[in-house]
Image 1 (spheres, helix red, strand yellow):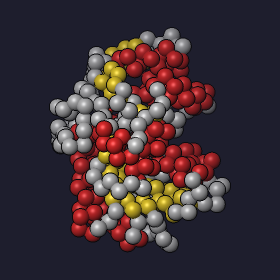
Image 2 (cartoon, rainbow, N blue to C red):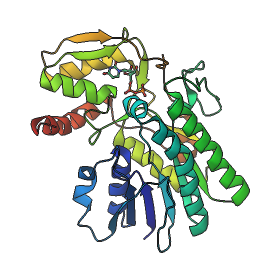
Image 3 (cartoon, helix red, strand yellow):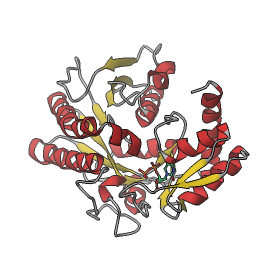
Image 4 (cartoon, rainbow, N blue to C red):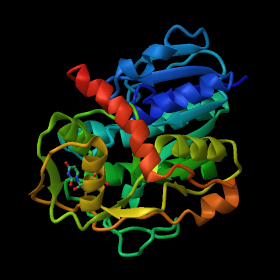
Length: 314
Ligand code: UDP
C-alpha cells in the first residue's frame, strides 16, 4: 500500500485519480480548495477509511503529516472560461503551487507527477504535436495565464529533478472528456451536451473547422498511472490521436442526444488553437499505452452522467 497525495483531488481528473488509487488499495489524501473542484466528485469516496479530504489552497504552505510515496499535482483551473475568470489564481497555482508541491515531494522523498497540458504547444505550427516541439504560445494573450504557468511548472519540475534529485514525471494532457466534467466550465463537451439535453442552441465558436482530439477519461487515467510508476523523466503526451473538427464534434453530440437543438455560430475566442492532435509514439513505446475507448462509446458513457446532472437541474 502506498500513501498518495492528489492536489486538485476534487476536480474532474483529480477525483478519477483518487478513485483509481483507492481501488488499488492505496491510502489517498485529496487536497482541494474547491474553487473549481466540487466535493460531489468525491462524495462516494468520503466514507472510505483510506480516503482523507484536506480543504487547502496549495499555493499556501502545505503541511501533511506522515510519509508520502507520491504527489500528483492536478490543482489548477483548466478550462478557458475558468482561467479567464481566475487569471491570478491560475498563475499562482501553476507557479507557487507547483513550488510548494515539489518542496513537499523533496521533504518526503516522494515521487512527483505534474499535470501539464497540450496548451504548452500553444497554437501549434507543427502537427501532430510530439514532445520535442517547443510550442507557439502568446504570453500576453488571455490564455497566457494558463499556458505560461504550466510552462513555468514544467521548468520548475525539471529543476527539482536535476538540482534536488526528486523523481519527477510530467504528463502533457490533451483534451479529455467524461463523467464529472463541470456542466458550466465552458469547455466544448459540457457546453454541447448540456445545451443539447436542454434543447438550447448548440454554440460552435468560429466556423468549427478548428480541430481537437478527445480522449476518454479512463484511458487518460491509465496512461497517467503508468507514467507515474515508470522511469520516464521527460514530458510525455497522453491523449487520443483521433482528430475531429469542432463542428463535427457538435453534430455527433446533437445526434447522440436525439435533440432538436440547432447549431449556431459564435465568435472564435482569441488565440484558440486551430489544430491539436497528440503524437503518442512515445507513450506507446515507453509505457506500452494507447487509448482504447472510441469516441462513440466514450460519448455514450458521458451522456448518462450529463443526463443525470441536467435532470437534477444542475
Ligand atoms: N468551443 C465551441 N463552443 C463552446 C465551447 C468551446 O465551439 O461552447 C470550441 C473552442 O473554441 C475550441 C474547442 O471547442 O475550439 C475546444 O474547446 P475547449 O474549451 O473544450 O478546450 P480547448 O482545447 O480550447 O482548451
